[in-house]
Image (cartoon, rainbow, N blue to C red; front, side, top):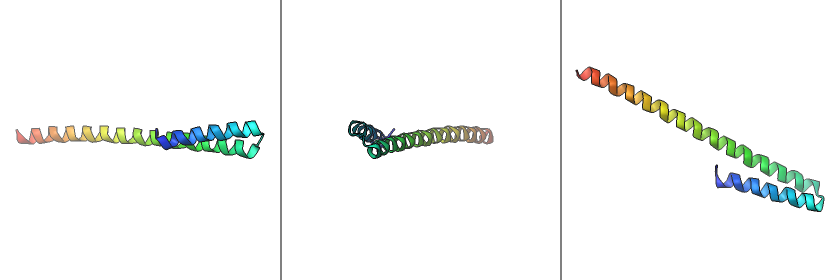
Length: 75
């Protein structure tokens, strides 16, 4: 999770709370939107990290297999 994602969420919570206190529906909605944006960014970042991890795992397996093939060829 990035700092910007968390800041969007916190900013949204503050806006929504201010909107609640002042009975300002526009500010409440802006706060909710900021929170949704922060949450979406966080989920996208997590998905990207998971994809990178899986790609690294596959690359390591391919490298291991290539090493096995090279070892067999050297015999």
